[in-house]
Length: 265
Image 1 (cartoon, rainbow, N blue to C red):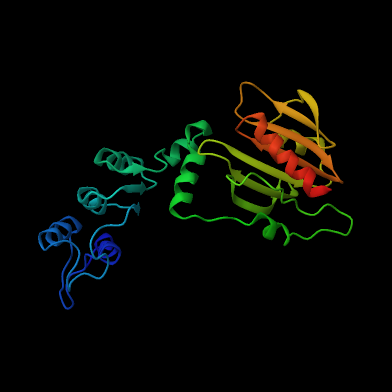
Image 2 (cartoon, one colour):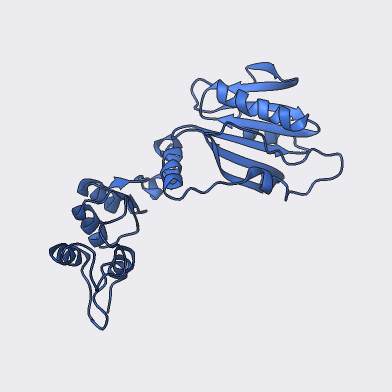
């Protein structure tokens, strides 16, 4: 019987035994055997002809055999696994670990800032460049005639959206969009109608208004607490309440606010 990780190795890296062979395949031995035979070329190889790919992504490797073999071969390895101990072992082997904080620590109430979530998202985006088309998603959100449609503001080209969805937030149907600005900076937009002060207070993490600023004709309330990483702008725009959020500086909020103003003209 073949183990799952050896089968993955065979399919992904050309390490399959020749047709008709039987029995389990050890990725480390297979790698060594292919190297002794002159690399990955030859009749027994179904994958790579000469070398491993530039970057190998390994998700969930219970035996760690696949990770050891890939690292030993010299391939850059990105390791993604929910198990903390395996993540630490992969790190010790020389792999780059994406998201090496234990899930149970987060669920137990640890501070979310300990997770490098934007960094993890950025790493995965580099491997799988998935671009969310905010305008296309916004066009699917129903709205009554005369109401403000779901916003899809123009943002700097270096940003990319990693979600755009209509969801319930504290019982209110909310258009919710998020962008990755840099590896460590996130930006977001939430838009809803007929909200009460409690809903707004929850969106701004109960941080009071520090000042009101006008950007392109729209008056925004700034909610910023030096002790917290997020800054927010809140405004009433054509009958909708719009909340802008960032973990970056005020310039990020202003970029979003300019995009909202342009969208509503």
